[in-house]
Every structure is written in C-alpha cells, then in structure tokens.
Amino acid sequence: MQLKRYPVALYLVLVILLSTPYYTLLARSGSMDMGRGFVVHSLMWAPGIAGLLSAWLLHRSVAMLGLGWGRTRYVAAGYLLPILYSLLAYIPLWLSGLAPAAFGEFARDCATRLHWQDGGLLAPAALQIFLTLTFGAIQSAASAAGEEIGWRGYLVPALRAKYGMNTTVLLSGLIWAAWHMPVIFFADYHSAAPQAYAIACFTLMVLTTGGIAAWLRLRSGSVWPAIALHAVHNAFIQWLLDPLTDTRGNGAWYAGEFGVALVLGSVVVAAVLFSRSPSPTSPALP
Image (cartoon, rainbow, N blue to C red; front, side):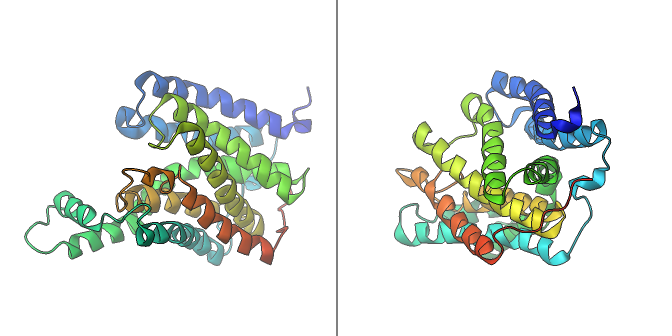
C-alpha cells in the first residue's frame, strides 16, 4: 500500500488508534475530570501526534503542519474572534432572559476562589476575567495545540489539496465533531438539553467554528491562529461565560456549546470571513 496516496485515511486511522485508550478510560470513569483532567487533555493531543506521525510516515517535513508563527495579525484574530462570536451569542441571551446572567453568583465565586472577601465583588470578578483571558488562555493552548496541529495543521491542508473550500470545511468539521462523540455519549461532556438537540447544536457549532479555524489556517499558512482560537474559545466560554449564565429551566437550549446561540454567533462571524475571502490560499503540501 502506497501511503502517499492516502494521506487522509492514514491520518484518521492513527487518530482512532491513539484516541481509543483515552476513550476507554473516560467511558470507564464517566467523568471528564478523571485524573484531574489529565486524561482528556492527553486525548486532545491524539490528533496532533497523529499529524506528526503521518508527516513522518509520508516522509514529509513537519513544516507541512504550519508550525511557523506567520503574521501576528492572524494570531490576534484567532484570539479575538471567539470572544466576538461568544458575546454575540451570550449578550442577547442575558438581555432577553432566555438564559439570564448570573453576575452576582459569579462574582461571589470569584471572591471565594481568590480569597478576596474583605471588599466588594467587582475587583475579584475583574481579576478573574483578566487571569482567564491571559494565563488561562495560555494554559488552554497547551491542550488546544494538540488538536489543532492535527485538525487544522494536517487534515485541513490535506483535504484542501483534493477538494474545494466548502467540502474541506464540511469534511474536517464533521470529522472533528465525530471525534467528540465518545466523550459526549459515554462521559459527562453534555448539557441538560435533550441529547439529540444538543448534539445537533454542538455539531453545527463545531462546523462553523472549525470553518473559521480552517479559514485562518489557510489564509495565514500557520496553525497558530487556529490554536489561539481554540484556546480562547474553551477558556472564554467554559471558564467565564458559562459560569456567568443561569442555564436552569430552558437555558441549556440556548447557552453553552450544546445550545443554539453559539451556532448563530459563529455563523455571523464565519459569514463575514468567507464573504471577504471565500477560498483563502492553501499552503501546498510538501
């Protein structure tokens, strides 16, 4: 079998082989916090390691993964865009009451965690937001890099070498969504919304945010903008916006990664990017 003829198939086989042990562990425990979260963070490096191994087996330079920094403006865009589409999603939910803001509860929790309970609540809440968007984003990037080196570093250019941009975004997004399904079905990565609805919203959100990440990867020639996007997405939504939001009642239908609001917010941002450059330049595979 000539591996060079099947770069995508080779990559996907390696992803499955490397991910399966961690899927098994997470299914056994049923918790994303297993091993203080180290198991799921190790799982997040399976796509990246698969990308590195694929490059090696195909006798290609790791430069194909886009590990060079590229232009800083694209990395900055990767940092800012998830903040933008998340706020487009959450602010209307807070204002409309579909998923009300829980600012007071969030601020009190910040004060407790920071051991800052001898004053008002604004200062500890502001400090927690600052820490999350700085060091928190860096910490998140340590795991997000593992996924992005694989999904956007290797898979997106490999698909783009054969298909158009729309097909590349669709296939890479569906593969990325499918990779998450074992932890959604067998661990506790889910929401209080009905499962079928939540999975549909999650899949659409992954398609649109994955499309933004693919656009940044191909436009910049670097994987770092996609790493920044993924890292800030996880940190901003999971560590700030979700705790700031009351999802009791029907709130889970709208907020979070399994709600419809993030789908709509990310669609707006993706539409603007793709209207500016529908088919960004793809770096050629060596």
